[in-house]
Amino acid sequence: MLAGASNYFRLTPKDEFRNFDLSLDSKKFFPCPNCPKVYQGKYTLSRHLRVECGKVPTNKCQFCGQLFTYKHRLLSHLRSIHANFKPYMYFSSRK
Image (cartoon, rainbow, N blue to C red; front, side):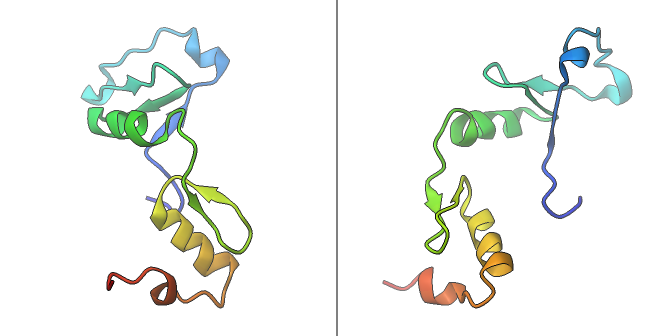
């Protein structure tokens, strides 16, 4: 999988009205009932509904204020955009 790619795809308005043959390659698709995202697995849809869909991102970059749903995406952002960031200084497992 490409870096930054995720396991969902969006249906365009044109695609939404087509009759899809969901039996192609015996794959099933699970559309989100709240947004246009469609997932290839039940677990990824349930994770999307639990963590992402309609939720405000809670992980905030302390340098630029950008918000992220997942902590690992915040860390990736910090490493690539804010090059001098040292994760061990901010996210230590020690208390």
